Length: 156
Image 1 (cartoon, helix red, strand yellow):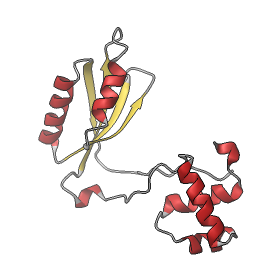
Image 2 (cartoon, rainbow, N blue to C red):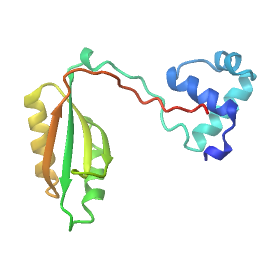
Image 3 (cartoon, rainbow, N blue to C red):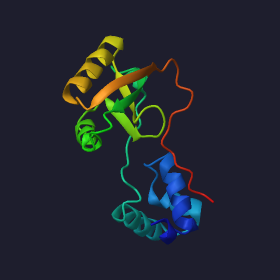
Image 4 (cartoon, rainbow, N blue to C red):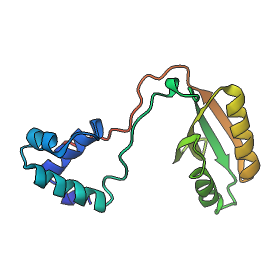
């Protein structure tokens, strides 16, 4: 997909990642295209799945879920369906923000948000009971956010 993107597309994506509410007219002035050309490019980028979502990022501290936990999980080695089953389960869990299948001492790393430690304990108990293929969890509590974001470098 990225070979179909030119520098205009990259510039538009860079701007849009920083503020998805910018109007096409504003983006057009910033990248040197007409607003209609920007709208056509945005439509194509969405249709091709390059833009997968446009969301509002909410400050966790202003919600009832101010705590973040990073959990490394080990899955049973003989259970090849475990990853698929866990993925399908995790997609339905709002408190599980992100999950990565990784190399190293754990198989999965999950970013989980919770009200407090007790709430996280409830989430992890549910995770373990509904996913018996997860044999162990290693949890880190985030003490302070240093940098958070989903911005992907686009420009060359």
